[in-house]
Length: 82
Image (cartoon, rainbow, N blue to C red; front, side):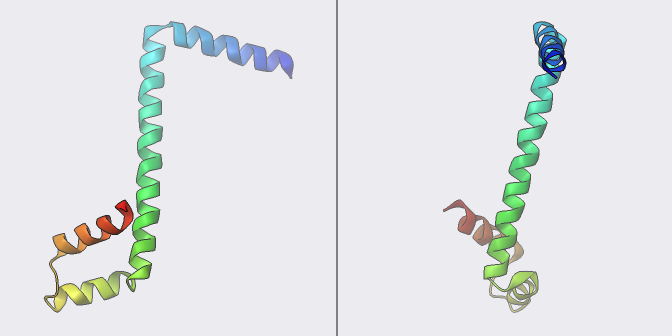
């Protein structure tokens, strides 16, 4: 097991020493962080929607002219930003 870990670490060091390897790793990390942020935002929006009665309730308030879709989206984002 120790030999496997040492081999993995040696490979990682070779990749990082290579400029193209660093660029690939940077792109992967950016994609990973982006995916994590999207997932967290999605979870928070779903929770905010649940507190407000769900999408059906939100659609009803838009249909009733109480708000427009853009305002509804802004209100949801404001609840998760605080």
